[in-house]
Image 1 (cartoon, helix red, strand yellow):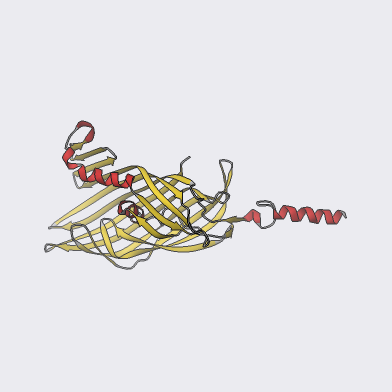
Image 2 (image 1 turned 120 degrees about the horizontal axis):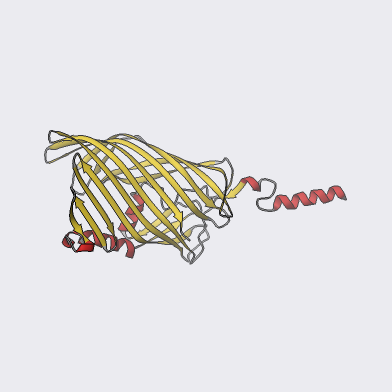
Length: 320
């Protein structure tokens, strides 16, 4: 009877989540947003780049720093859940944008948020909403920010976090798709996963810098459930990510109609995110990527070429 008692106790312990057996090393890495539940995150993308080139008989160096920040809220919607997908509505607020550029000795700086704008060129303030300077030049920028904060995006997310049926205002959709992120979040395994197990995914980028690509660039990612991470009283799954761009040549066009060829593409990077299996929610993540490529183009008979080196960081943090 004593032996039977020990076996019975061991069976009970093994059946409890996180106690004994394989459960201690296994997590349900499934995204889950309940109907009417709202998840809010600070979400940002920042990029630093340096480009060297030759145009109109002159060599030049272009340095750029951009930052795009916003608060993103995802709300679960009522819908057909038979296929384990989650319909969600995405809204944004507190949108801000920073753009700093320098070409040799010439410098510009633009800061933009709802209701505020400041533009400085070579030390001279040309637009300053706080002091009613150059307000006629800020209308288009402000309209874009207002659209971002008034718009919504609707989509369906599967248990791994992959998007489908994406609809909504282009201002929000493009901001996410063009940022270099896999989507709103990195991709999960979408199932029970052991520590040390890996999975893969491919996402596409429809733009590179200011150029819309004829065929999107492909980025392949390798994710691993590396370990458990105890944080703020929660047992979180740490997911490590490694990504690499396909190094095929690309073609693109900017808003001014300039056609370019993008060659020598070499991009890679990765990072870490934390996921809470108990709630089915992401907690935080930081991903960094480096890119090198060459852009060659021609407009009005003038040829130009740029060798570009850039670093992008994508972060999201759960906002309580």
